[in-house]
Image (cartoon, rainbow, N blue to C red; front, top):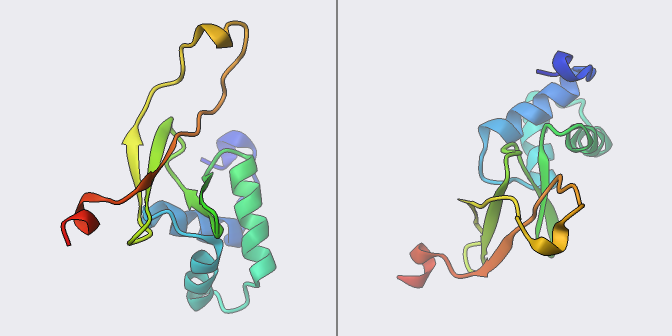
Length: 126
């Protein structure tokens, strides 16, 4: 997958991508760093942040800026929305389509961010 985009596959980038891909919970950089460091103690925070930046810039992961405290990351780069539960802090994915708005005639839409905040059904029922 990295080769197709001519993206250098360093052990750090692979480890960070694998973690985000395997943990579809929208982890933040701190969580990714703490977990990846267990397997690769030599990795620094800077290494992980640089890997996240490079992976996002090249379209392998998507930053999710729904939480005002930190940026989360998603390996699902398809067009979809996110719901943030203000109680449990969990982020849920939901389907959405690219906008077909008359106001956007002539524009090329490359990304769409749809964010909702509120209380998820699990938290609502407790």
